[in-house]
Image 1 (tube, one colour):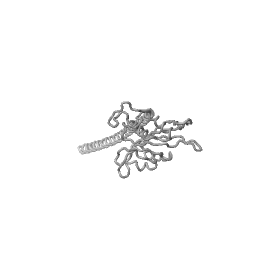
Image 2: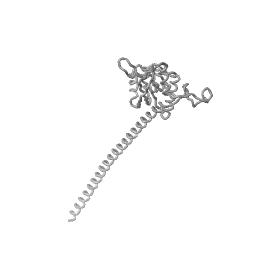
Image 3: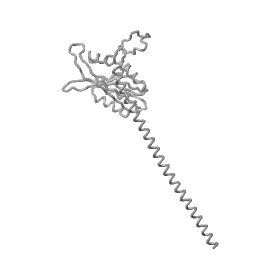
Image 4: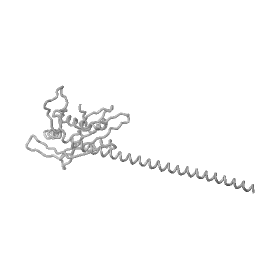
Length: 249
């Protein structure tokens, strides 16, 4: 009987040990499952949050560009291409001559089909002010006008572009691309971070004569964050070759 009791006690101990091991194993498995589920939920939450943040940022930038384009069309600047609010040759002008930049563009184009140097400087002056909240972005303003051969098509008239040189400093270019394809190829190089908005822009030709002609046009505003090239430096110059650009000093 004593032998039987010893065997029973031994068996009970083994059963307790096995149950303890099984419970520990179950606990480890349960904790592993909980850890995996937690990581999955955390990863989903972080991904969802980053997605919302990215979408909100893109929406904000897109809305800002629409507002910037509207502001540009109604903005005024100095007729001589200088900011009328700052000193000129050490003297603040008492009665600065200002006008709508859009009007200045239309007057230049209507007179001789070109945009004067003073108006070019005024355009960049307004654009720089509009992009003060986004100094890291390069921008491009494209004006197209109606050209009639067999059919009427919108062809590039002039491009105002702020890019960066190899040292990351802003450079200003006035470009005269031959076709829309050249502009599309240029913008395609910045497609990952590109924002483009557009609107109508009406021109009048021959305004100094009696044969005034109305022309349909479009205005495009685009911006992007300039990327590093293979040498590790910022540069837009290689991309500007096909746009027939001249640096504005």
